[in-house]
Image (tube, rainbow, N blue to C red):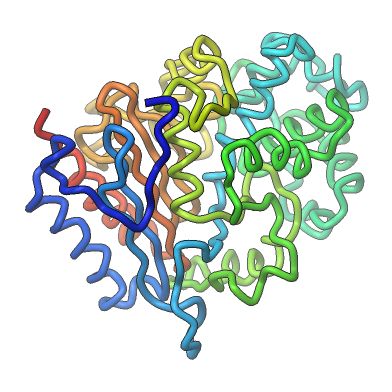
Length: 381
């Protein structure tokens, strides 16, 4: 499996890899119907099983009024689907013994160790427990286009709670903390480090942390499909060019499918390794299961990966984003009411879904769950 190359553009029969043909056809139809229903302007969908390409689909156009169809190499802004790749960058440094998982952030970034953040560790950051989930977010936005200016603001933040005592989703500060540690330890800006240590080894040719402006003509424009997402869509039309290691990976369903296939293979694909098996196993096991004070819901965190599985009954009947049959071994990350990426090593399956329209919470959760449920129900072995 490790040396096997994914062959895109040539889908295998679902039943040849233990999937129900009818249900996979339904998932493909659902993807196309979402376009017809106006729930996205353009999209991509890839499904892998046992290292084979089962679905490799695109639909729609890159922007309203354009005749430019979405292609497999059309980059989409993926929002928080960025976070697992930033986590892998950090885990690589841990493997090289340049960083310790339970080392203090301030050991590598001394300016960070103030105002109640002195005890924050790398593990706290990866599990969203470092104490600065959202403070200073809006005043910080004008700084996003200057790395030095942005991270100086993060270092100066006062902790909202003692690190390690609460879990609260760190929307963007997760990326600034990890990204600055990568820069200080490796000597490379995080976007260059990710290029050198993930994109290039995996041949992810349509992926950038911060979209270069000369790539914008072929990129999928971002749209709001709900009134409460209008501001986010407007902001990230510009912010997608900034380096936000928690939110501005611009990529494709194919490229992220390659990333997740490498992880399904134990960290390697086509003879190129990005992470050791034992490090990966540690990263995708449950490190926290409980209440998240930003989501106000139940979460399971690995190290930078959001995990699947059923939720306790007291959290209501809202289905997990990865589908009702997802497991605590299912790992990946969703992205801002649009993109979704997940994989499961036990079932040897990976799913990547890119769209350029941000829906309302319930409408978006429905499309994530509906598509994921069809994939899980299709598994016959």
